[in-house]
Length: 423
Picture 1: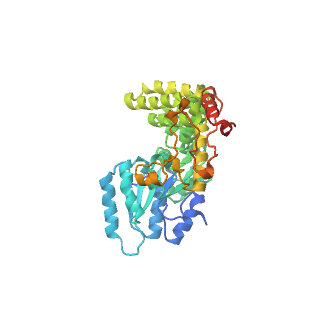
Picture 2 (picture 1 turned 180 degrees about the horizontal axis):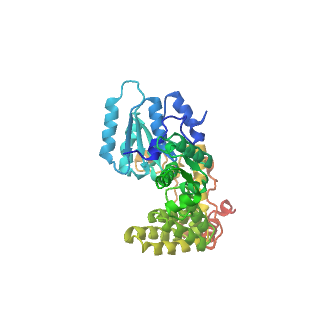
Picture 3 (picture 1 turned 90 degrees about the horizontal axis):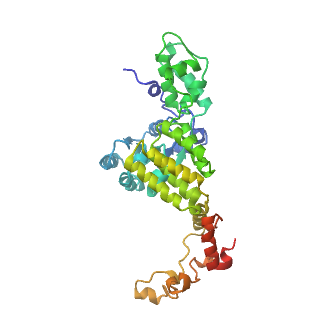
């Protein structure tokens, strides 16, 4: 049985690889790493059909390194450990570490990801992970910190055209069919930057015709029998629509937010994904202006898990309207980012002695906890004292944004701290 067109055309060298020139073009970061003969662990993040798996295979072939592959969908912790054991036994002294490629690494559980840590740390394997989801949310921090992250982009129109011409001129089966690309708009629109989808559509259209084939937009639409504007939860439009959804909530437009959610629902998007994005929006964009938003978003997520589809759409809709119509504040979001930025600049500043823990007599003798004032012993359960390290004792991170709810919090801080909190 003949292989699918996408498999027949899978490139085997970087010279044949289409797209991602920011990573594999002359002088680009991955190209330099490959040319040096040594690679470190990394994760490839990008939509489906942009060459993540292909790139991993090309790297292993180019470097002539043993290559192991696991699918996060079908593999468990035992499979991970078995592969690591094989890699450890099969490696010769001073030889480059075998590559362990994990497709859809975002689907690995925490325990599965934990089982990789030791092998990656000790160099038993060089990990290459592929994911369509944001690794910041789906990959545990210790593993992510040991890997470089490279972002792959949807293929550009020029890349897709190059792939089409390669298919009809070099593929052993298609070149016998005398294919003319009269119109390519529908092919581009349906593929959404996904090379695999483009080739699958081309193959479907060609196989549905007899003799010579003239590709037109009308023919492609007729053969696919679907709306050219259809949402594709695995393609580039996925990212555009979720962006429109979040920005509509942030922009306080409940109608637009409902519309974009309806587009996702009709396109078959995972309801948990929608609910998860609403939890993020509630904390990032609404925050202290309406703290109940986060509670309702979490309740909606819980409802999706408990009652499922289609009834959960009602809870999602209720929450979307509530989030969109809520007052907005990103003060907590800006505050933590400002604090993280300063920590990275200043490092491990010492904790003031009076707020250190003093569980032993030695610590007490060294002045730990000496002079600490217990706020509950004072009127209003507050007393002014220093909580930040000496070097940044007057630093501000949180700046109240004066929505009705947040204004109360801000005014309380002004009454406690005076000029320090007067913006």
